[in-house]
Image (cartoon, rainbow, N blue to C red; front, side, top):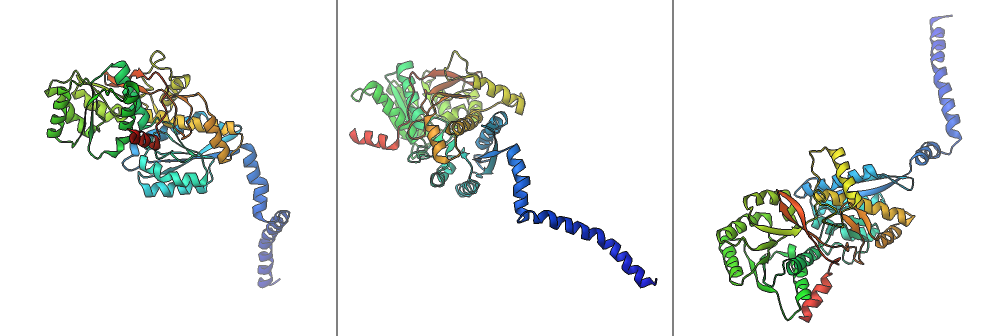
Length: 430
């Protein structure tokens, strides 16, 4: 046998195993139409049967100016998912996107989520980003809940958008009840910033509740003004508050303005006045600010899941305690849960309960199940919704004690959010 023949034989020996492997693959794959059908028949089916899943989309700002709130809410959502990750045998998977605190980015993010066909969506912490997503969500018929956004336009007219937090209108109504029924004030003042549209609904809610409780003919509001955030205009407003004998003043100004405002209150010896404010007064930066003004009396809409007790609020549930314990277990005992984290937690619980009650994964069915929820007890209280997707609930007001928000007053009755049309109609009648 010459050298060339030996080379041919050796080449054939090397080819035989490869040919056998090819024949085996051809035989196996020929039993299915295509490789994809093989994958679908065996691999995908086995995965689906062992752990079927449903997707809940989450769009929150984890970058940009709303990143702090978005991250807090996301922590609550992820905590709830880690505890309650199964609905009727389906594992719940979160698909998360970052709105970047931007309207354009939020629209892109929500469009991406919609293409994934989630059963429901949670988000977002930003007012503008939630509002920007509203039309897309309604068109896709996907039930969505925002944990903390309060702009009434987000849910108004959109049957698929809900919210876990109370609205600005409800907050205003709660503060008015406190001023009239708890403080028994007949000398109320209102000081707001000029051109501040962000608190319009809150102010309208406050004013309308005052008129409801006192009657239109006998107003308890003795002085009302809009100011620019300058020292001169603040002094002028405080001067007229004092002249009119105001003992309760609704002044929902932001943290950046209240340091100067309260300094002037102290300088003018007006610390006997109780100041009512925005829910942001319960956040860390405002709480830190108040360390410089310990003699100022303040009350604001805020439910503290850390300091509330059964004796202070009927909204505190077993789930409140579970949230506190599990939050510490997951994030560490040094990590203090915020109210936004609790709202994120509750938004998730609300959705999985609705999905369970709906018995289907269809958007209209889940939406109807959300509307039918009644007295669902979560970490921040019990949930039922009105026809606009807003929570129907008693408003809880807080004050500061030892550098922490603590519950001060629970409204006597549940408060419904006033729709913008109702407010406008009331103004026309007057």
